[in-house]
View 1 (spheres, rainbow, N blue to C red):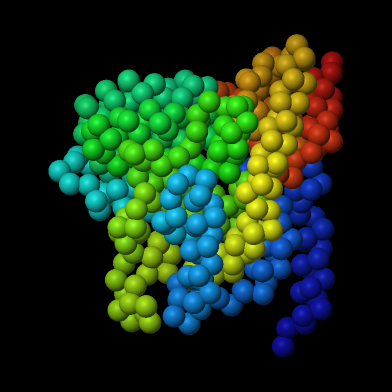
View 2 (view 1 turned 120 degrees about the vertical axis):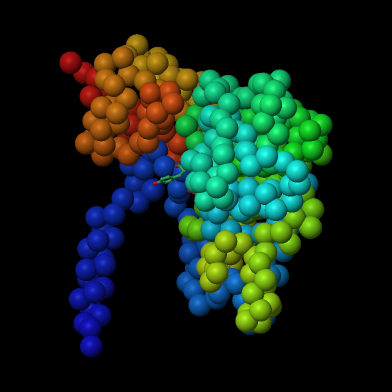
Length: 377
Ligand code: 0PR
């Protein structure tokens, strides 16, 4: 018999040494501290297999409600709960391949696309043709159309909130290209899904995110700006028939079917996501998006006032900058030594801070202080 007390004290020790988002050091990752109601729901439903709606009908009920609430932002309630942006992207391309007829084995996407799209293409034996783009600009719809004409892809992927700079590809224009050429368009809104509709509403950004007629699917991560526990994401389709294409026959299961890439699925994170979305509500996400953007602009202005920094104006709350003294890898390393965890933006040779819901102006001030310190000579 193991000594549980010993294990508990070991766990507590490790926990005390593990950085927590609210302490302010985690400034580069797209993760955040989950809402407490999500943690409660997660523990309560820890035993639930999301792949078994016969034994656990709650899973299907809450999935439906969750899709209807969040989907109201984009104009669809069809889709499924997944384990994250990567599963959503792989599944979207898998569905695209299943529904496309007479197309090549190519996927076309701007070079700013997330690495999970490379992963999906590798897994499916498809070729990913990347359109070289400036990481600070959305893809030019005319160039996108040229690639679609030249390669006859079975899917096009654009990103609403790119990983390295938070740029928003123009979904409406991409949709027109997709419609005209009858090609599946997937919009990766893993990061921007719970920001763009609100920032657009307030006139802060031009682009909107919606099921324009040529859009086939949109993915939105709840474990990013949704404040749900990891792993939580939603993949929306324009209509119900696509959802069926994300499912597989499995006769031994009570439901006879399995939807999504995972077999046994974390039902707890689905229930937790439902609880968090219910608690925060769309109005809550709207307020949060405005706050995140405000904090990001504060960081941008502060960085812009320092002559040793070259900073790019944020579109979404992702702030990217270079140092005139250090190479970006070196700068990120030096800040890490000061207890500030940033990520890199290799396409811009820059450091990346993501102003997630947990990031306050005080955290930003601590980052600036550390930055000033490593630049003081
Ligand atoms: N699409 C976009 C636009 C993303 O930025 C990401 C993740 C994904 C899809 C994939 O989502 P999942 O990670 O949920 O599968 N971007 C995160 C980031 O750049 C990925 C990440 C997070 C990587 C934490 C490492 C890490 O430690 O922050």
